[in-house]
Amino acid sequence: MIERKLSGASPKTALPPGTIDTQMHMYLPGFAAVPGGPGLPQEPLPDAEAYRSVMRWLGIDRVVITQGNAHQHDNGNLIAALAVMGDLARGVAVVSDRTSRGELKALADAGVTGARIMDLPGGAIGLEGLATVDAIANDMGWTTAVQFDGSDILDHEAALMKIRSRWVLDHHGKFFRGISPEGPELSLVKRLIDRGNCYFKFAGCYESSRSGGPDYEDIACIARAIAAYAPERIIWGTNWPHNYAKTSIDYPDDAALADTVLSWFPDADSRHLALVENPGSLFGFNPWPVS
Image 1 (cartoon, helix red, strand yellow):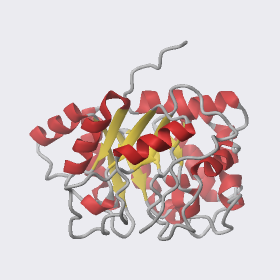
Image 2: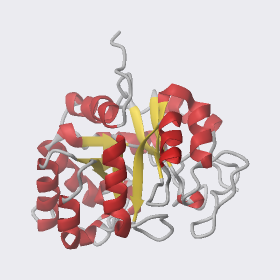
Image 3: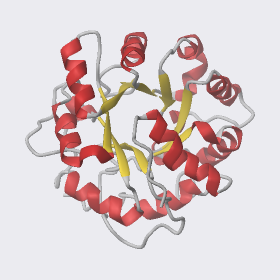
Protein backbone atom coordinates (compact mmCIF):
# COMPACT_ATOMS: atom_id res chain seq x y z
CA MET A 1 0.00 0.00 0.00
CA ILE A 2 1.29 3.44 -0.94
CA GLU A 3 0.77 6.47 1.27
CA ARG A 4 -0.15 9.49 -0.83
CA LYS A 5 0.38 12.81 0.90
CA LEU A 6 -2.92 14.73 0.76
CA SER A 7 -2.27 17.69 3.05
CA GLY A 8 0.44 19.81 4.57
CA ALA A 9 1.83 23.33 4.46
CA SER A 10 0.40 25.38 1.61
CA PRO A 11 2.59 26.20 -1.39
CA LYS A 12 4.75 29.27 -0.79
CA THR A 13 3.50 30.58 -4.12
CA ALA A 14 -0.22 31.10 -3.64
CA LEU A 15 -2.36 29.76 -6.48
CA PRO A 16 -4.74 32.45 -7.76
CA PRO A 17 -8.52 32.09 -7.34
CA GLY A 18 -9.98 30.00 -10.14
CA THR A 19 -6.84 27.87 -10.58
CA ILE A 20 -7.37 24.87 -12.86
CA ASP A 21 -5.37 21.66 -12.54
CA THR A 22 -5.29 20.45 -16.15
CA GLN A 23 -3.50 17.12 -15.62
CA MET A 24 -4.69 14.48 -13.18
CA HIS A 25 -6.38 11.09 -13.10
CA MET A 26 -9.13 9.88 -10.82
CA TYR A 27 -10.10 6.27 -10.11
CA LEU A 28 -13.46 5.37 -8.62
CA PRO A 29 -14.44 1.99 -7.13
CA GLY A 30 -16.17 -0.43 -9.48
CA PHE A 31 -14.20 0.30 -12.64
CA ALA A 32 -11.75 -2.47 -13.43
CA ALA A 33 -8.59 -2.11 -15.46
CA VAL A 34 -8.93 -2.98 -19.14
CA PRO A 35 -6.50 -5.32 -20.94
CA GLY A 36 -3.86 -3.49 -22.94
CA GLY A 37 -3.06 -0.88 -20.33
CA PRO A 38 -1.40 -0.85 -16.92
CA GLY A 39 -3.23 -2.01 -13.86
CA LEU A 40 -5.09 0.28 -11.50
CA PRO A 41 -3.01 2.40 -9.09
CA GLN A 42 -2.10 0.89 -5.75
CA GLU A 43 -4.71 0.93 -3.01
CA PRO A 44 -6.15 3.05 -1.62
CA LEU A 45 -7.61 4.21 -4.91
CA PRO A 46 -6.91 7.89 -5.64
CA ASP A 47 -10.56 8.85 -5.75
CA ALA A 48 -12.63 12.03 -5.62
CA GLU A 49 -12.45 12.37 -1.83
CA ALA A 50 -8.66 12.12 -1.87
CA TYR A 51 -8.33 14.62 -4.70
CA ARG A 52 -10.62 17.12 -2.98
CA SER A 53 -8.15 17.05 -0.08
CA VAL A 54 -5.37 17.94 -2.51
CA MET A 55 -7.47 20.77 -3.94
CA ARG A 56 -7.97 22.25 -0.46
CA TRP A 57 -4.29 21.82 0.36
CA LEU A 58 -2.91 23.48 -2.77
CA GLY A 59 -5.67 25.98 -3.48
CA ILE A 60 -7.06 24.42 -6.67
CA ASP A 61 -10.61 25.41 -7.60
CA ARG A 62 -11.23 23.49 -10.83
CA VAL A 63 -9.91 20.43 -12.57
CA VAL A 64 -9.51 18.63 -15.89
CA ILE A 65 -9.74 14.86 -15.38
CA THR A 66 -7.84 12.86 -17.98
CA GLN A 67 -8.81 9.31 -18.89
CA GLY A 68 -6.26 6.98 -17.30
CA ASN A 69 -4.40 4.38 -19.33
CA ALA A 70 -5.76 1.63 -17.07
CA HIS A 71 -9.22 2.11 -18.58
CA GLN A 72 -8.08 2.31 -22.23
CA HIS A 73 -11.13 3.04 -24.48
CA ASP A 74 -13.69 2.56 -21.68
CA ASN A 75 -14.58 6.08 -20.53
CA GLY A 76 -17.04 4.88 -17.86
CA ASN A 77 -14.81 5.79 -14.94
CA LEU A 78 -14.19 9.24 -16.41
CA ILE A 79 -17.91 9.91 -16.86
CA ALA A 80 -18.57 8.82 -13.27
CA ALA A 81 -15.73 11.00 -11.96
CA LEU A 82 -17.09 14.03 -13.82
CA ALA A 83 -20.52 13.42 -12.32
CA VAL A 84 -19.04 13.29 -8.82
CA MET A 85 -17.00 16.46 -9.28
CA GLY A 86 -19.75 18.45 -10.99
CA ASP A 87 -19.39 21.69 -12.90
CA LEU A 88 -15.94 22.45 -11.51
CA ALA A 89 -14.58 19.60 -13.67
CA ARG A 90 -14.02 18.93 -17.36
CA GLY A 91 -12.74 15.73 -18.95
CA VAL A 92 -10.29 14.47 -21.56
CA ALA A 93 -11.51 11.16 -23.01
CA VAL A 94 -10.19 8.45 -25.31
CA VAL A 95 -12.03 8.46 -28.65
CA SER A 96 -11.32 6.92 -32.04
CA ASP A 97 -12.98 6.09 -35.35
CA ARG A 98 -15.03 3.47 -33.51
CA THR A 99 -16.62 6.07 -31.20
CA SER A 100 -20.19 6.69 -32.35
CA ARG A 101 -21.88 10.08 -32.60
CA GLY A 102 -24.13 9.05 -29.74
CA GLU A 103 -21.13 8.24 -27.57
CA LEU A 104 -19.50 11.56 -28.42
CA LYS A 105 -22.67 13.41 -27.44
CA ALA A 106 -22.84 11.49 -24.16
CA LEU A 107 -19.24 12.39 -23.42
CA ALA A 108 -19.87 16.05 -24.18
CA ASP A 109 -22.98 16.05 -22.01
CA ALA A 110 -20.90 14.57 -19.17
CA GLY A 111 -18.39 17.42 -19.36
CA VAL A 112 -15.76 16.09 -21.76
CA THR A 113 -14.05 18.85 -23.72
CA GLY A 114 -10.90 17.05 -24.83
CA ALA A 115 -9.47 13.88 -26.37
CA ARG A 116 -6.07 12.33 -25.79
CA ILE A 117 -3.25 10.79 -27.78
CA MET A 118 -0.84 8.79 -25.63
CA ASP A 119 1.93 7.36 -27.81
CA LEU A 120 3.86 5.67 -25.01
CA PRO A 121 3.62 2.15 -23.54
CA GLY A 122 0.14 1.51 -22.18
CA GLY A 123 -1.51 4.32 -24.11
CA ALA A 124 -4.88 3.55 -25.67
CA ILE A 125 -4.35 5.41 -28.95
CA GLY A 126 -1.05 6.64 -30.31
CA LEU A 127 0.17 8.97 -33.02
CA GLU A 128 -1.17 6.63 -35.69
CA GLY A 129 -4.63 7.86 -34.65
CA LEU A 130 -3.74 11.55 -34.48
CA ALA A 131 -5.50 12.61 -37.69
CA THR A 132 -8.70 10.80 -36.67
CA VAL A 133 -8.71 12.12 -33.10
CA ASP A 134 -7.89 15.63 -34.30
CA ALA A 135 -10.80 15.52 -36.75
CA ILE A 136 -13.18 14.42 -33.98
CA ALA A 137 -11.90 17.07 -31.58
CA ASN A 138 -12.11 19.78 -34.21
CA ASP A 139 -15.68 18.80 -35.06
CA MET A 140 -16.70 18.71 -31.37
CA GLY A 141 -14.90 21.94 -30.47
CA TRP A 142 -12.63 19.99 -28.12
CA THR A 143 -8.92 20.17 -27.31
CA THR A 144 -6.51 17.38 -28.27
CA ALA A 145 -3.88 16.40 -25.68
CA VAL A 146 -0.85 14.86 -27.40
CA GLN A 147 1.79 12.89 -25.50
CA PHE A 148 4.77 11.09 -27.02
CA ASP A 149 8.56 10.96 -26.73
CA GLY A 150 9.34 14.55 -27.65
CA SER A 151 12.94 13.64 -28.39
CA ASP A 152 11.55 12.54 -31.76
CA ILE A 153 9.44 15.65 -32.33
CA LEU A 154 11.34 16.60 -35.49
CA ASP A 155 10.21 13.32 -37.08
CA HIS A 156 6.58 14.28 -36.41
CA GLU A 157 6.70 17.89 -37.58
CA ALA A 158 4.53 17.34 -40.65
CA ALA A 159 1.78 15.58 -38.69
CA LEU A 160 1.82 18.13 -35.86
CA MET A 161 1.66 21.04 -38.30
CA LYS A 162 -1.54 19.56 -39.75
CA ILE A 163 -3.46 19.54 -36.45
CA ARG A 164 -6.60 21.66 -36.83
CA SER A 165 -8.06 21.48 -33.33
CA ARG A 166 -6.63 23.36 -30.40
CA TRP A 167 -4.07 21.02 -28.91
CA VAL A 168 -1.64 20.60 -26.04
CA LEU A 169 1.90 19.27 -26.17
CA ASP A 170 1.74 17.27 -22.97
CA HIS A 171 4.06 16.81 -19.99
CA HIS A 172 6.75 19.38 -20.85
CA GLY A 173 7.09 17.69 -24.24
CA LYS A 174 8.57 14.56 -22.61
CA PHE A 175 12.01 15.04 -24.17
CA PHE A 176 13.34 11.82 -22.69
CA ARG A 177 16.78 12.13 -24.28
CA GLY A 178 17.05 15.79 -23.37
CA ILE A 179 17.14 18.91 -25.54
CA SER A 180 18.90 22.26 -25.52
CA PRO A 181 17.16 25.64 -25.27
CA GLU A 182 19.03 26.54 -28.44
CA GLY A 183 18.25 23.25 -30.21
CA PRO A 184 15.98 22.51 -33.16
CA GLU A 185 13.39 20.75 -31.01
CA LEU A 186 12.54 23.87 -29.03
CA SER A 187 12.58 25.94 -32.22
CA LEU A 188 9.93 23.60 -33.60
CA VAL A 189 7.84 23.91 -30.44
CA LYS A 190 7.91 27.68 -30.88
CA ARG A 191 6.86 27.37 -34.52
CA LEU A 192 3.98 25.13 -33.49
CA ILE A 193 2.92 27.65 -30.86
CA ASP A 194 3.12 30.42 -33.45
CA ARG A 195 0.50 28.65 -35.59
CA GLY A 196 -2.07 29.74 -33.01
CA ASN A 197 -3.59 26.45 -31.84
CA CYS A 198 -0.77 24.81 -29.85
CA TYR A 199 -0.37 24.97 -26.07
CA PHE A 200 2.39 23.61 -23.83
CA LYS A 201 1.63 21.84 -20.55
CA PHE A 202 3.74 22.09 -17.41
CA ALA A 203 3.04 18.77 -15.66
CA GLY A 204 4.91 15.64 -14.61
CA CYS A 205 8.41 17.10 -14.94
CA TYR A 206 9.87 14.17 -13.00
CA GLU A 207 8.72 11.71 -15.67
CA SER A 208 11.25 12.94 -18.24
CA SER A 209 13.90 14.78 -16.23
CA ARG A 210 17.42 13.45 -16.60
CA SER A 211 18.91 15.70 -13.90
CA GLY A 212 16.19 14.88 -11.35
CA GLY A 213 14.72 16.70 -8.39
CA PRO A 214 14.29 18.79 -6.50
CA ASP A 215 15.14 21.39 -9.16
CA TYR A 216 14.68 19.41 -12.41
CA GLU A 217 17.02 21.90 -14.03
CA ASP A 218 16.99 20.24 -17.46
CA ILE A 219 13.22 20.64 -17.60
CA ALA A 220 13.36 24.06 -15.95
CA CYS A 221 15.59 25.63 -18.61
CA ILE A 222 13.16 24.61 -21.37
CA ALA A 223 10.13 25.64 -19.30
CA ARG A 224 11.58 29.07 -18.59
CA ALA A 225 12.29 29.61 -22.28
CA ILE A 226 8.71 28.79 -23.26
CA ALA A 227 7.23 30.79 -20.38
CA ALA A 228 9.17 33.82 -21.56
CA TYR A 229 8.24 33.23 -25.19
CA ALA A 230 4.50 32.54 -24.97
CA PRO A 231 2.93 32.72 -21.50
CA GLU A 232 -0.49 32.89 -23.18
CA ARG A 233 0.05 29.32 -24.46
CA ILE A 234 0.99 27.50 -21.25
CA ILE A 235 -1.21 25.45 -18.93
CA TRP A 236 -0.32 23.68 -15.67
CA GLY A 237 -1.22 20.44 -13.92
CA THR A 238 -0.29 18.46 -10.82
CA ASN A 239 -0.09 15.07 -12.57
CA TRP A 240 -1.81 13.66 -9.47
CA PRO A 241 -1.84 10.86 -8.31
CA HIS A 242 1.72 10.48 -9.61
CA ASN A 243 1.34 6.95 -10.91
CA TYR A 244 5.08 6.66 -11.62
CA ALA A 245 5.71 6.67 -7.85
CA LYS A 246 5.60 3.06 -6.63
CA THR A 247 6.55 3.61 -2.99
CA SER A 248 5.59 6.14 -0.31
CA ILE A 249 9.20 7.37 -0.21
CA ASP A 250 9.14 8.15 -3.93
CA TYR A 251 5.80 9.97 -3.75
CA PRO A 252 6.30 13.71 -4.34
CA ASP A 253 5.19 16.50 -2.04
CA ASP A 254 2.64 18.33 -4.21
CA ALA A 255 3.14 21.70 -2.52
CA ALA A 256 6.91 21.58 -2.96
CA LEU A 257 6.53 20.39 -6.55
CA ALA A 258 4.08 23.21 -7.30
CA ASP A 259 6.49 25.77 -5.85
CA THR A 260 9.29 24.44 -8.04
CA VAL A 261 7.28 24.48 -11.24
CA LEU A 262 5.56 27.80 -10.60
CA SER A 263 8.99 29.39 -10.07
CA TRP A 264 9.66 28.83 -13.77
CA PHE A 265 7.19 31.58 -14.72
CA PRO A 266 8.66 35.08 -14.93
CA ASP A 267 5.93 36.81 -12.92
CA ALA A 268 2.47 36.59 -11.35
CA ASP A 269 0.72 37.67 -14.53
CA SER A 270 2.14 34.77 -16.53
CA ARG A 271 1.22 32.35 -13.72
CA HIS A 272 -2.34 33.67 -13.76
CA LEU A 273 -2.55 33.07 -17.50
CA ALA A 274 -1.33 29.49 -17.15
CA LEU A 275 -3.39 28.59 -14.08
CA VAL A 276 -6.67 30.39 -14.80
CA GLU A 277 -7.18 32.14 -18.12
CA ASN A 278 -5.53 29.81 -20.63
CA PRO A 279 -7.03 26.53 -19.33
CA GLY A 280 -10.40 28.18 -18.71
CA SER A 281 -10.70 29.04 -22.38
CA LEU A 282 -9.08 25.86 -23.64
CA PHE A 283 -11.33 23.44 -21.76
CA GLY A 284 -14.60 25.35 -21.82
CA PHE A 285 -14.93 26.54 -18.23
CA ASN A 286 -17.20 29.40 -17.29
CA PRO A 287 -15.30 32.59 -16.37
CA TRP A 288 -14.24 32.66 -12.74
CA PRO A 289 -16.12 35.40 -10.86
CA VAL A 290 -14.01 38.40 -9.93
CA SER A 291 -14.28 39.19 -6.24
